[in-house]
Structures are given as C-alpha cells and as structure tokens.
Length: 369
Image 1 (cartoon, rainbow, N blue to C red):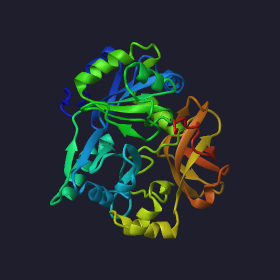
Image 2 (cartoon, one colour):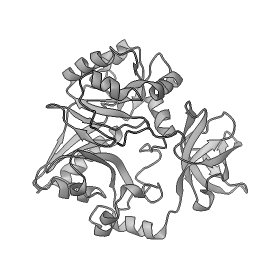
Image 3 (cartoon, rainbow, N blue to C red):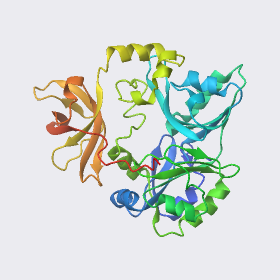
Image 4 (cartoon, rainbow, N blue to C red):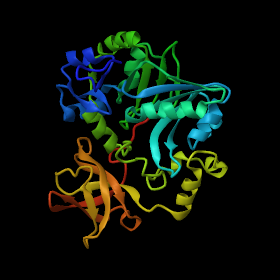
C-alpha cells in the first residue's frame, strides 16, 4: 500500500479502479480515499438502501490473532470473553484505556479454536497492532496484520448478487463469518444498517471478484461521504467523533457490548474505571437529534436547554436522505435525554431547535436468521 505523490497519504491497492470510476478523492485517517463518485452523495446513499453498493474499506485493517494464549490476550485487551463466542461468530467490542475510554471499537470473529480475526478502524490500526503486539510479549500468541483488500457489499440485493458471483454465503447470518478459500475472510456485517458483507481477500482475487460484481447493473461504487450518512441514519458510532478515548461505553449507551459475566470477572484493561462509571451512572447520554426544518446541524455544535444552559454537544450531523430530514447524534445531560425533549444547537450565532429522537433514524435490515 504505497504512499501517494505528496508523500503523506497512503493509497488504496485499487486506486486505479477508483480513478477509472471518476471518484473524487479526499484525505481520511491518513489515506487518499474515494469520497464520492459521479452518482453523487444523495444517489449513492439511496442506491445502497435500494440495491447494492460497493465500498472500498481497505484503509481498515484485518488482524489475525492466533495461538494458545490468543483468547486470554483478547480477554485482557477487550471487555470480551472470546472463548464464549461460538465458532464463526463475530462480536462488537472495544480496546479501552485505563480510564475506560474507547481507544477503538473493533469486530472480533472466532474463526477456529485459538484463532481470531480483529477488524480495526483505519485511524487507530497502527496503534491497535502495536498495542496487541505489546500485550503478546512473552506469550504464545501471534499478531498477524493481513495485507489484503477489504470490500463492503451492502444493500438489499447484496446477498443475491454475492451468491451469483460464487460466494457461498447462504448460511451466514448477521455477525457471522468464515473463510471460503485460502486468503479470504468474509463476514455478514457492515456499517450501513443494511444487509451485506465485508470481504477481505488478496488484491488479485479482488480485481477478479469486482469484474463479476459489476456485471450486475445493480452494483455501484459508493464513497465515504454516503457511508457516513448511511451509518448516521443507522445510529452507528464513528470512532473519533461519537466515541473517543475520552468517552466510555456507559455514557455512549454501549453497555450491551460488555456482557455481565465479563464485567464480573473484571479482567480487562480499564475494568476498575468501567465498573466505577457503571455504578455512578452515565454523566451524559448519547442521543439521536432531529433538527427542525431542513438545515443540518454539524459535529461540534454546542447544545443548550430552553433556559440557555449548556447541556451537551453534537458529535455527528448531516442530512438523512432516506429519513428525509436532517439527522444528528450527540451527548446531553441525562435529564435532557428523554425522547421528545426540545434542545437547541448553536449554529453561526443562531439557536436551532432540535428534538431528542430515537435511534436509529431508519430501521436496521440485518439478516438475523
């Protein structure tokens, strides 16, 4: 994965294909990424909800963790019991710091006895790999970051199209995965709220698969801009905005990702702080926000109550093409978090009214079996 001409941004292995598709590129997490294609953000977003879209997410990293001590390492690194995950099942979890802040959110798949796959976010991947390698010192465990292309095929037509292209995915349900052949790793997952798959595979195989996928007219490239609006409508957090090293799973409303037996065993990094925060209760709460009118409210806008008291901040915001109105997410004090509560955002000197809105803004359509 080479650096681009300015010597700072890394290029995707398939950059030539994105250039040929007339992508508009921009910087994201140190990578030169396709932001939009000629369809444009609105149509790319709606295409994903109606057909099937392809996202090149090769900026993310797939990390193989294997060996006799692999499960114990992951149980210490994350608030997770890796052994209890059934084979070929995936779990959403975190790398926490000692204050229980979220250093990264990751997906862990239990592929075989003593063998797991971890999918990490682009901006944190190098730190995650170094963190795991440090934890692995002196233990019988191998940390192997894979050199691969990672594609996300998302949308209601994704399963039918994947089957047509020879991927034997009929038995997969949401948050399960397998290795269809050597060097490939496929999960039924994604970050759009739609049914779909994430496919890690060698570059040469990816180019062959893409030709098959694009033989179906329902498939289109979609960029990071629509990926962001899709995940926001689906109420899914973006690390670095909605969850950060300063935000813990209690405040973020992500306690469902930390099983009670794991809390009780308290063997994970940050367990002491996590349990203290759990006992004290959330100091702020992550909520959905629906602005009145058509003007989106963006990340960073401060939130106030009707009396002008500052009560929180917007962490993600934009227009929801499927919802048909502006959507946002942020944190407010617990006494302002009830659905229907009226709050106000500071936008260029004006106070824009918003309602606390249920998450997600559009229903999830995962295939849960």
